[in-house]
Length: 323
Image (tube, rainbow, N blue to C red; front, side):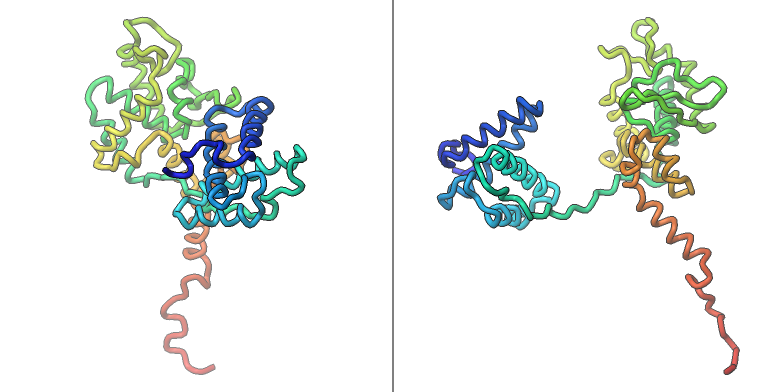
């Protein structure tokens, strides 16, 4: 039997403190059931390792914790997963220290595994063009709606939840902007390009086709489902199907990927990070900085193209004698 599947009673009396720790997380910090289960799983794994050596989890020292984290890495776990295990152990041993059960924190001085920040999945401009062409080729009201959805996503970078819950009043009149209610009930204005405005105007003429039994609802993109509006799951399905029509890998296409494409293509074409932050609705610019690799690439291109020493002429000095 895998040691992680053994009963908690096999891990020594120290596992009682694990239960107390989990109770504290639930009662004092309001930890969700999934969070508590993740802590329990991580601590059980460590307790199983210690039990095989005759050590209780409450008695583990810093070397035991460090060896455990290193073994997780050697076993092929991603740095992020190893870091989560270490975070579970940190919280647990800080709890033991605060409760006076231990005199020292067994995780003190242990650095978290280095994690490379994952870059967002992005479609190229030509790939987005292929998606738009495939949407325009879809016949009937469904194609007109799909084109409008895609144009809005790519023109604004809206979160999928923001898009499907746009109210009918969000339809632009003259200003050419959408008023979006984002996270934390914060409103922001997002400008629309001409193509997106045209797509929305065309969609307005067929919107009644999607109303539930002809009954008016407040949503810009109504549906006959229980929510009354197009769901994020249905939108994702439509985009997957559209990707196949455009000869793209459906696994690479989602509403969130189009949000990334919006931000990345803006930056690649000269937009500044602060403006992109405002349009994405990020409260903190540090969230938007995941796209700085695009800025780095653009700056390198600018230097190569315009700095006099970046691309010296092949004819420099040709035919000249000694001074």
